Image (cartoon, rainbow, N blue to C red; front, side, top):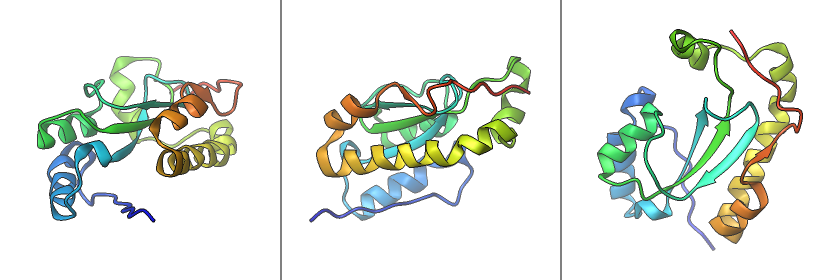
Amino acid sequence: SQRVILARPMTFMNRCGPAVRDLTHFFKFNTRDVLVIHDDIDLVFGKIKIKQKGGDGGHNGVKSLIEAWGSGAFTRLRIGIGHPQTQQAVRAYVLGRFDAQQEALLEDVISAAQDAVETVLLKGVREAMNRFHGKTIPESNVGRTL
């Protein structure tokens, strides 16, 4: 029997760190026991990567978590959303809607991410990394452009 808490902070993503830190303190979780699921523009749409610790990789939400916890020692499930054509378009791209082609594939991407989360919880991070790390759903590497 495992205690699992699913939380989505009701803060701006780039200020989520203090809220998540307070949650982990309240429930007495160690950051090593936390799985953070987030989007990643540096991965093609649908690619899943699992990472156990590290830096923020330019992700403001992850940066906020690291600053609040004082450590990057937590597991991340990164889900690729692709990258915009220009650097100026990043904000609009990340906050924008998926195109029709991506929308059609989104259910499969979410299903694979759900399977990865369940594998982390039931079989451990190593097993999940072996099974899902670098896997792209769908295998066709659909690109997203602005």
